[in-house]
Each structure stands twice: as structure tokens, then as C-alpha cells.
Image (tube, rainbow over all chains, first blue to last red; front, top):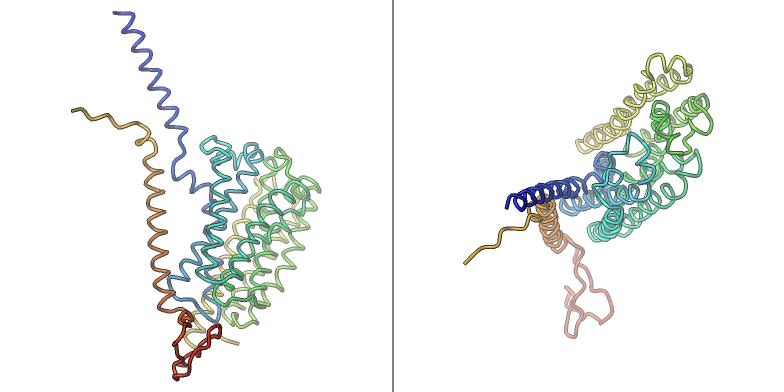
Length: 324
Length: 72
């Protein structure tokens, strides 16, 4: 009896341990939410919302809410498909090693299934809530991010961020198209603003995350052409960003508030890019990439403030002020 | 009469099941509200084009042709 009891105890302990392990490995709802890259989704929601608000015509409230929801879910779906494809890279990089797939919480097939289902669902629902132009742009954005950027460019060329940045630039254009059913100069300039902003933003990040990208063998500019060239590229793309950002101020969605804000923010970004250009690696490692980290944070603020200024202009136009 | 103890899988998947239920319920509510809004704010409906259907000015609607719209 004593033996039986002992075996029984051991069996119970093993069963309990096994249950605990299975429970720990069971994907929770939050893991699936994490698969949709909620922080990227928040930026998509913000820029798409501004694209919708500054448009000259608007959908009724429920259709507008549905449109923004499914633009965000479409972005989330492309994030899930990106995580499915890049699971091998994510496992190597410190910054991404705790994502749901490399950490083993979600199986790659589950991520793929969720991504495909959400992609199809979000495109269909945006088409029903808004129009086919917006739905087509959303479908193209998902295709561009997953196939053109993730599958093709990311592992092939150091220009991956430059071309792939288009995927992140589409949301305000989709928001505009959802309201108007077409694409205009204003929508193209909002696209161009994010498109030109992406390279200096990501290269500032790459400067102080160098180990991650080289270990994962992702051909970031810092890895393939060195850090001096990357610093020069940040300066060049920031200079190219300025006229695009200022041009928006002279369209129907711009105005004095936007122009003043954009002028100040562009001056700040240019100053940061110039500070990065003047530094070398010895200076950067000595202060633990303080300037590079500062410029990266400032670039996030830059985009938020400029789209915030467009939003402010839309409010002022609504009140009868602000148009040039 | 005995009740079978609840399988531990229900406890393990509780948050996932609740999350899916809330998401599906939200989708149903949203679809309903969107339908109501589309019907009340949508384009003029062109469904009634059968025999005997007339335009607002009383002229008959020819099957296959778009009815006249009322300018509000």
C-alpha cells in the first residue's frame, strides 16, 4: 500500500507539473492581441483617423467607426503575418525574442490563420462600410507589407526600410479614401510625409540596436554600409522630408497652425540629424548613443505633432478659421 | 446522480474564450448598427422596379432603368 501510495503521489505530482506546464504554454487572448502589434496599430489608428477627419466629406458615425476599426485590424493582420514569416529573425533578436511565436506561446500556423482571416475580414468589412477604393488600398497595403517588405525586401537589400516604409504610410490615405472614395493631392502628401519620415526614424533606431540586426543577418544599412554612411543617410532623408512636410501646409488641409508647427518640428529634426552626422562611434559609445536615442524619440513626437496639427487645422476650418 | 467535474481545459482557456465571445458579440452589434445606418442614411434604393412601379412624378418605371431620384 505504501508503494502504491508513493507511486500515486509521484503520479499526482507529475500530473500537476504537466498541467502547470500545459497551462503556461496555453496561448491567452492577450497573446493573440500582441500578435497584432498593438503599438503599431495605435499609430495606424491615429494617422488613419486624421486622414478621415481632414477629408472634405464624412461618412455617418457608425460607418466611420467601422472603417477605422477595420483599417486598424487590417494593419494588425499584416503584423500577425509578418510575425509568422519573421519568426526565425525574431527569435535571434533580443528586442523581438519575447514575441508570441519565438517564445512558444503561439504556434506559427495559428498566427498565419489569424492573419489571413483578419486580412480578408478587414478588407471585406471596409469595403462594405466605406467603399471599394479604400478596401483595395487596404488589401494592397497588407500585400505590400507582408509580401513586398517582409518576404522580399527585408532580407535582400539595405533599402528595405525605404521602400517598405510605404506600408506604414498608407493608413492616412486609406482614411481619406474611406471618406471621399478617391485619392487626392492631400492624401498623397500625407502618404509622402510618413514615407520620407520612416528611413531616418528607423536608422536612428538601428544605430543603437546594432547587435540585433547583425546577429539576425538583416541587411540594415548599419550592417551593410557601416554607421558613418547611415549617419549621412539620416541627414539626407531628413532634408528631403522637410519640403514634403511643408508642402502639406499649402494644401486645403493645411494652414498657419500647421505651417508654424511643421517649421518648428522640421528645425528640430534637422538639428537632431545634424547632431547625429557630426558624431562618430567613439562619441556615441561614450555617452551610450544618447543623441541617437533622443532623435529616435523626437522622430516619434514629430509625426504625432504634425498629424496633430492637421487635426487642429480641421477643427479650425470647421469653426471657420485657419484656411490659407 | 453525480456531476462530472469540469475539465481543466475550460479554466485554462477561460480568457481566450471570453475574449473571442466579446469580439464576436461586438462584431454582431457593429454589423447590426452598420446595417441600420446604411438603410437610414444610404443611397436611394433602386429595388422596386417591378411592373406597376412608378417614379415620384407618377411616370412608370421601365424595368432595367434607374428610377428618378427625389431632390430633397
